[in-house]
Image (cartoon, one colour):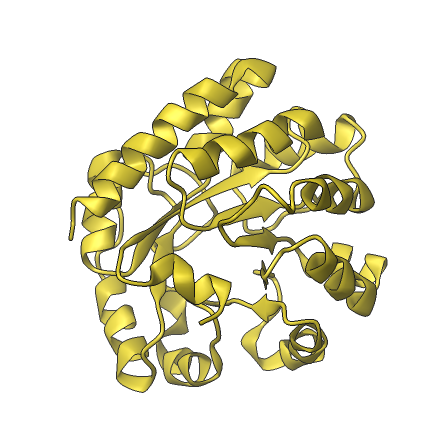
Length: 259
């Protein structure tokens, strides 16, 4: 069983997201350890980019702060690699195709593997064009995570057939960000995935409260939370670690309570 599969094995997974380098890489390092300690099953690490098209204002601002603090892709790899002996939960990068191309696809894949990252999410690569990077990452045992959204309806079967690791299910249209209400229609899309392949499906975009996490975990295999965590980091800066730790602990408890 690979590390991503282990995150979902016999349980509902809680998957937090953090923007690397916001407010600085030392704080990110502390956050990764704290989120693991608080019960995260898998952690998404965002690589800051100047034009993050899938992100709402909260994560856009985090990207701006991270880049302003001098964060680079190389420094992120070095930081994650420095934690390789301490991080036991699987880690995946979330980034955009431009930083991957600029860095070099094979070099990016190799360095991801070297620092212990086992997956990558690239939201702006269409399903029809993913093969260009999927094979290179697969050569280094790094899984390209597929995404489905309410607009994927006609393509869900094809996406599911070729999906690996887990399927990232986007709960609603638009960009990332905290939402008061989530699209429960996602359960129908998850049903379509499961008809094709028995692969974990985790829901992201908009989840911020324990109640929402519990609601989404009840219809899927896990909940992904980004903007609510990034907002805590923005609010508390370098002092954010204990606040994020407690938040992750409460969200993990909510997800676990579904079982």
